[in-house]
Length: 497
Image 1 (tube, rainbow, N blue to C red):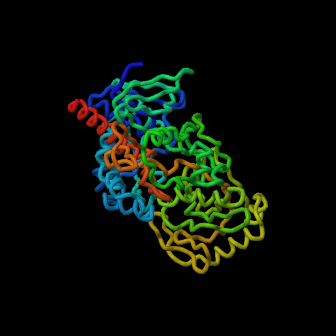
Image 2: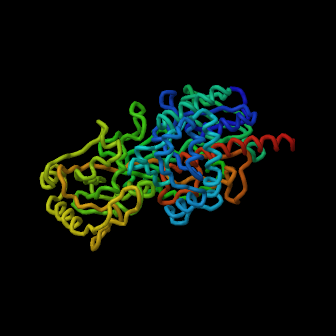
Image 3: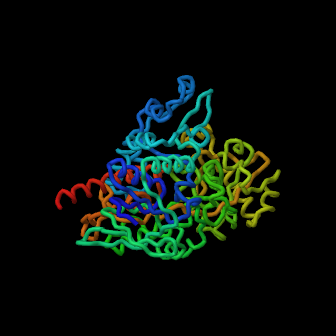
């Protein structure tokens, strides 16, 4: 195989942003995708496409969605979501752990990067169904996440692959990178397993963007905890930590929360690994702030209404995994059933329905007496107030533990519904230490010459939780950065030599 200026390992959103930006800067680029072509695209293929960026107003949004008419815009209430809002959300949900130098890059470069992504052919649309409620004839957006890619993750990846092929990036499938080689302390080649043989690809720079280790059961158990062997893998089965293993062997510094991950409540009957024949984030169950969640023992175990789902869903999967049988039940009555997100209406959705709470309990493997007592106690604790799911309405509970801080309505109007959920892992938070320009750093805090990283491999941004849509944005920001930085590195090295 011929030599390349830049080899990108992986073929998801971050990887292709890296490849495209490097190619735009004049580099010869090879993308190595471990999966076969029909399973390409990594975790990005499975997302619902929501992407979080800072913006000033609706005019900023309309630059991404130019087909939005003035009449449509007049029916939209779009709160400002500036860089400071984004930064504060990131710091709030990570308990202040997110590293400022990386968080600032993500936040400050988010809007210009999303504009660049649009220039690559990715199309966007307003996220009406999941991030707005209709009130007084207007769509009131909330939560800092109003935009998604058209045709969800499939549309995102189709556009990026099309762009990569259009500008002459070589992509090889069923090619598993297993080792990085150095000469004079610089990355000089990648060892690749493909077509039942091992080959060496010479290169001046490598961008690692092949995901974290969430699909590796052994690594999940080792780093996150033994119980994580039971977690469903929501995305690609190929994210088994290859890039991390290679980088650490080459002297990279591990960084970030290796014991943490993004994990959500997903349908109890969801496939054990991502099913490419059913793309999109169709198994998640994210209307739980309007529910109460009960375990098999009949007890509640989290504050379902602590915050908008954007800021709690990535950590509540872990709480479900801790429950007996790794299962919980989201309980709704007819008052809120029409408000639930669209995934609750798909044929893939698993649920139980009954005219009374007693009959509902009979359908579930729960402690019936405790289940009914928990709901009775909850109903009695609901405070008066104005119920409004477009804001944190402070309509909570009093005198019960855990509380429900917002969106508390008595569960009293039949029919009643129970949606069983388990834990699905999206990606692990442990990664590599990188500079703000995506250079991989060694144990002495020095860049490893010729080695860069993007996407889930960047450690130090997410801890314990993350604001929804930040993963795709981080992938794009550090993907674009890594491609540009790799080419600058190559040009500087050639000037020296």
